[in-house]
Image (tube, rainbow, N blue to C red; front, side, top):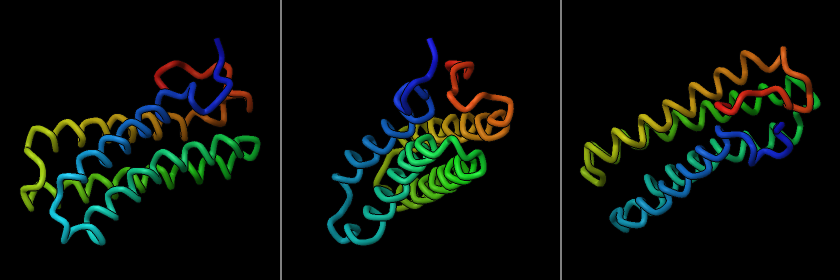
Length: 132
């Protein structure tokens, strides 16, 4: 079965789920972080998912799609940086940090693979493997 919507992309679903997790986790952060760390983590984690979605909608234009995937990669890395701050500030445990960092590493690997293989794929994405 081919990929018909962005929700058929594993990378989008993982990025979306991670953004949801970040939202839930940041609810436990101190109130003084509301307009700094919390806001930044929520924005960057959501951006990682939404850039995939926006790029998918514009996939007819290869360079635009790749640019959005690259923006998603940047947002994913930004989120990883904020997670480092959350760890240092002792807002999250080492184990939670490791799990989230590993998950964002997986998102990045999938994004990188999709960016590098996009040119060989038809615009409807049907032949994409399930690991993207």
